[in-house]
Structures are given as structure tokens and as C-alpha cells.
Length: 190
Image (cartoon, rainbow, N blue to C red; front, side):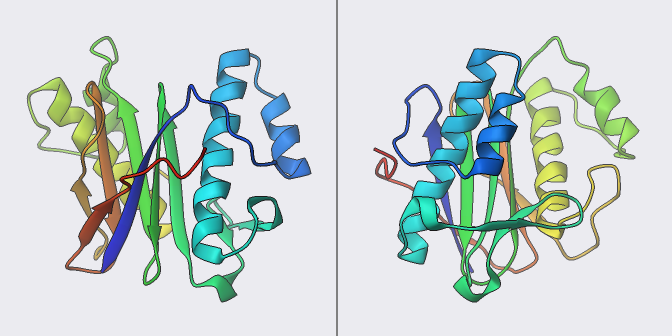
């Protein structure tokens, strides 16, 4: 199974257009930086998915699952997931199985071990980076399943750590194995 993975810097403005519901959601952010970064992540997602769907970014129509996971109309055969943290977004795309992705900025002042224990995670690693990788694997698995973070993902969903910018941890998950990761090598969101 092939998963294409795009790392997107969020400090560059994008040129595609948001849908009215996305504009309304962006307007709810109190911080201008948060609004701008969320908008840039969503615009990057539209632009990247448009290359797979062969349609203009503004024509893509998203639906959401019961737990809020976005999807394209099923006829496209495109599975995707988006995560953003700090200055970066990570977008995973597959044509064969649901995917989940998570990226987190490693922050030593956050008690990530306590958060993992609240999720029922046990036998935790010792270092802060390893704890963040455990968190991203858990969140990516939950997102691949389309479930809630506080509900353990079903068996059979596998997560692997993937390359992330310095100071970040990232993982991608799916229910198929083996997994081949192809990293985005160009900025498709100019």
C-alpha cells in the first residue's frame, strides 16, 4: 500500500479558495495566527487533493463522518487525512485504504505521559520525544479508524513514525500492510 505524505509549512499564504463553511470555521479562531495557519493548512489540503481528483481546488466537496473526519465524495477513491501543529501541516493521501496522520510539536513543558495515561496507554517510554511519537501513533490510529481519541482504535490499524521537521514527531496509520511511504518532494501549493 502506498501512502503519499506532504509536509506543508504554514507560514506561506495559499491561493485556492475556501468553501463557505470553511470560511465560517476559520472566522471562529480568536488568534489571527491560528486563523491564518488553519486556513493555510486547509488550502494546502484542497490544492493537494485537487491534483489527485483532477478538479479545481475550490470545486472539492467535503463530507464529515460521525466523529468529524473529513472525506471527499466516495467516487473519487481518495483517502486522506490532515494534521497541523506549530508551523507545519502533514497531509497523508492513499487510494487504497483509510489513513490517519498526526504531527505534534515537541514541547518539554507538557506532561504528555499524563495525557497518554488518560488514554489508557501503558508501558510508556522514558524520553519526551519517544512519548510524543507514542502520542502521534495513537492519534493517527484513531484518525485512520475514524473514531474518537479517547476510544481505543480497533485492532488491525497499524501506525509508523514518519519524518517530521526538527522538533516535531509524526506518524501515519492505516489498516493495510505493508506500507510504503512516498514523501512529497515539491511544493504543490504555490
